[in-house]
Length: 282
Image 1 (spheres, rainbow, N blue to C red):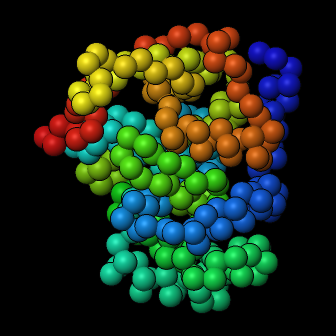
Image 2 (cartoon, helix red, strand yellow; image 1 turned 90 degrees about the horizontal axis):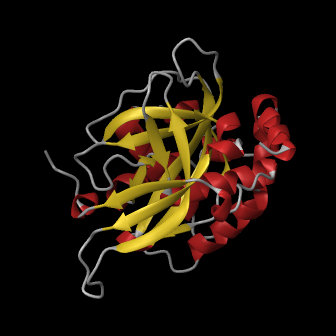
Image 3 (cartoon, rainbow, N blue to C red; image 1 turned 120 degrees about the vertical axis):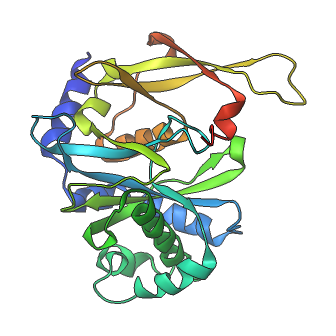
């Protein structure tokens, strides 16, 4: 491991300060709010909660700053992927709840940059997106929205395969330590930030996309970065895709971390089959 990455790793252990994270996310928050104003189509929008908090990643270990992810169950599309809780906007449910987020004491009103940035959100779309994210977190993992501290927004992401635009809201889980996943979630996976800041844990994901398409006669090969999360008892998770892109943006904005070049990383094979688009629905 290079010395620079060791410095980043140590920084993640002792330097997670919410006000510093909010300050680091100010520019991306401003840009994301501007993106929300420009032609947001709720039918194609997905809102996710990028959750950080102190957790023990393995039994017997002390709690430390972690990124808290869900592992998608076999009954939903993209089964087995690590992702953030979230989903699409349901205006009939989310508009009434969004009114509560404008009240004093709400996570939005407690955000230190809301007074400075609320003029960018002239159409009050951030409260609606936040209400969506909080509802989805409650449904998927019984996440208590009253125990969240909003820290800002990451840049928006386009999920081309599913024609979705993702709006990531960064929140700190202040005190909740147990989650109760619903049928959409196989399990909760906390990954220590110090691991995500360890260059040796990244790999080159060589993904064979074996999904029929009108413009493709043979499987397509795509190469992208991935992160390998190992369990002490054996086994691992491959963390990749749009959620990893968001995690890497967070690590760069907050800690200045950039992973090694793809060509320098070991190769890990993977395959996507048609079930990836639908789940097994068992």
